[in-house]
Amino acid sequence: MPEKKPFIIGISGKGGVGKTTIASLMVRCLIRQGIRPVLAVDADPNANLHEALGIEVTGTLGSMREEAFTKAIPPGMSRTEYIHYRFRQVLVESEGFDLIAMGRPEGQGCYCFANDLLTQAMQSLQREYPVIIIDNEAGMEHLARGTIGLPDILVIVTDPGARGMRTADRIMQIGREIGMSEERMLRIVNRAPENYAVPDWVYATIPLDPLVEEAEMKGDPVSLVPRESLAAVSACTIIRDVFHENQEQA
Ligand SMILES: Nc1ncnc2c1ncn2[C@@H]1O[C@H](COP(=O)(O)OP(=O)(O)OP(=O)(O)O)[C@@H](O)[C@H]1O
Ligand SMILES: [Mg+2]
Picture 1 (cartoon, rainbow, N blue to C red):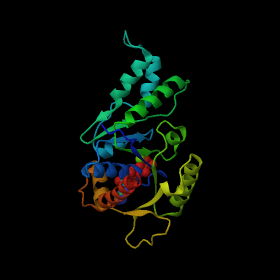
Picture 2 (cartoon, rainbow, N blue to C red; picture 1 turned 90 degrees about the horizontal axis):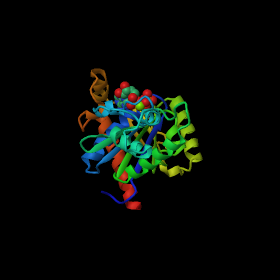
Picture 3 (cartoon, helix red, strand yellow; picture 1 turned 90 degrees about the vertical axis):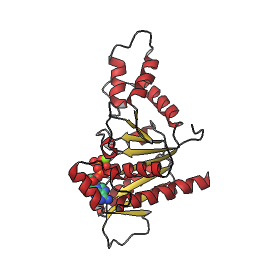
Picture 4 (spheres, rainbow, N blue to C red; picture 1 turned 180 degrees about the vertical axis):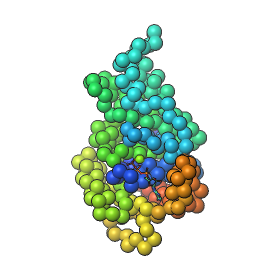
């Protein structure tokens, strides 16, 4: 079990730009590179990272938190113990990675006690992984709340269009406000056309990938495209560079 703090990579960006696709491809790359187990965190309330990875989820932290307050607790268990126990149950274990879905950030009542316990449970869980990939929703709710903690690297995905770029700028601003430094925020243009003139503020591009489109059409898990596929190769290069740069600095 690694003693070091995990390397946390958050993936953010406008709706539909490819966050989940890229997050899932990065999880597969890390496993192939022997950097495992990976903790994949689905921080989007409309959880679908599991589909991209080809696994099932049984619950989310959000639903569990509500239930921990409304349901009867098994005899002999305190509420704290119950929350920790259920926390472990919503963690899905798979080959080379585990996945946890955050679900909805807040129910109607005040769940401050449960939130504190969840943050605690999340922090103790994090120590078990060398790397964590967080697929964020289009906003930055969980990041801003600190349930997960500040990522070491924030990957900001955009499409080549002007609107995606503007959202990327806004995310950079939120990133600064929560204490991320400029060099830890990487802008990535996804679905870049072949003749795309890469602006100098772009860290890397990921091309439009027909095999990803085909997997999507068939309803296959997108992260299981062949490793030579265009998007997989680019996602792997990004994650390898980012991870190794970090190791050298550590
Ligand atoms: N490089 C790519 N080449 C081809 N298709 C892609 C690529 N990246 C993403 N897609 C497709 O774009 C669509 C949106 O991708 P994805 O679901 O990953 O975006 P998202 O940012 O997670 O969306 P949301 O904001 O809804 O969570 C999907 O159909 C996906 O298959
Ligand atoms: Mg998504």
